[in-house]
Amino acid sequence: MIGRLIKKKLDANKLANVFVNSLLEITENGFEDVKSMISDDTAFVSYPQLASNAEDKFLLIVIVGNLRYLDSHFEVVEAKEIHTQIVRKFAAVFSMEEAAFEKIIQEYDSLISRVNHPSKNTLYGMSKAVFHKLKLNEFQEDYFKNMSTPNPLFLKRMDEIMMNFLWDWDEFFKKHKMNFS
Image (tube, rainbow, N blue to C red):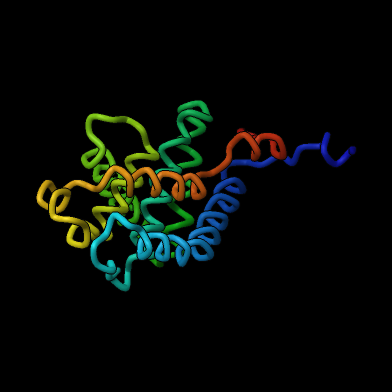
């Protein structure tokens, strides 16, 4: 009981550690299920062949989608500090310069906005980005293939899966208190 009342205090650096490790773990453990879902989806008329770097592309979509939610849970200055720490840590994971990793993040963010325009729904944009980044258009029926747009039934199923890769801020704030200096 007392353990539930005492919240752990985290600063931006510690939050970024938890965030990065959690996203890496969930993507590593969950991507095979995503691949299976895509392979078994009835929206495709042939078995989708995913590139060897599909998991990395998926992870980047998950990272960007989750970064987009920072502003809705933190003050602007706090969100920027957390974003910076997250980029720093992911850059280290991928053995990249921070600026180079930030550029990739911006490219994926732009992709999500572009494929999802005019909607601002991040989850829907993530699902569409998965469709486009994994080059799934060529595997669907001609009607949707010719329009170069994902089958809406596939997108609905993909949304349900992508929800599992979004950070649960409500649960996080039940256990942790942020400490910004």
